[in-house]
Length: 227
Image 1 (cartoon, rainbow, N blue to C red):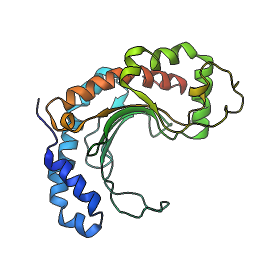
Image 2: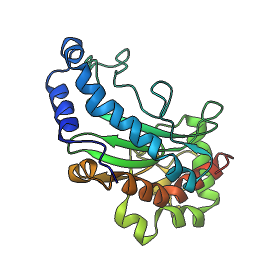
Image 3: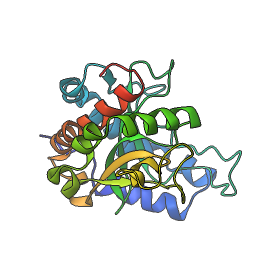
Image 4: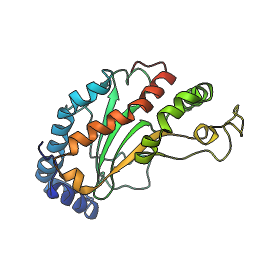
């Protein structure tokens, strides 16, 4: 299998972190395109059949605009950090109905020393949170099968902030209270730089998507979405 990213890809991101300005980026736009954006789009395109094997409802969309690859530009309107660019590449593999309803998905993050694969619901709206919590409360065995199997817990960790107290309407002594307190329903696993730069990246991402499938399937069921 071909390698997608190279040392130059991570070198570009490190340099961008040190020189996060429009002037620097404009001067190095060709490096961004050749070393980061185009390799990421190729990987997304190649992941289409791998993701389809997990679920026909999810999309690996290699379109340069409006597809899976997030823009490198940051939205600084509501942030104290006014640096204009992200210092990572991120790709969201989304549900076919994402424009109709809030839906879980799969995610790939490439950043020097901080790359990872993830899946789930990140910062869901309050109504979506309530629906997932109620579904976990009413269907605990399915949640435990999706997130507490030994093989899953060895590879993935559940990430994100949690409430301090039990959410309203849920007993503090519920067996899954730690999960019911979650503000996000996301599992992640790290990728070291050698793997990101090597020939097994696509195979590894595809394998992790398979392993994360039961979590995404459960979240889809909670939200009455097809999987």
